[in-house]
Image (cartoon, rainbow, N blue to C red; front, side):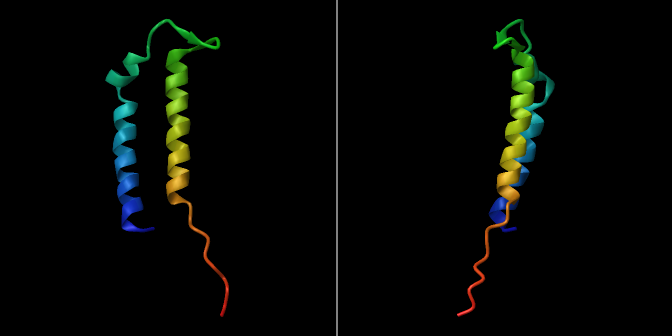
Length: 69
C-alpha cells in the first residue's frame, strides 16, 4: 500500500472517532423518523456503512497486468 493510502486511512480513523463521539451523536438524537426509522439509527448505521465502504475502497489492491511481452 502506498503512502497516500496509509495517510487517508489514518485520517479516516480520526474522522471515525470524531463522528462516533458523544457530541456529534447527540446531534442526531431527537424524535424524528426517516421512513419509520429513528434518525439516530440512520445516522449511526449509515455512517458505519459509509466508513466500511471507504475502507474497502482504500485497501483494495489494483489489478496487476500479467502480460509477458
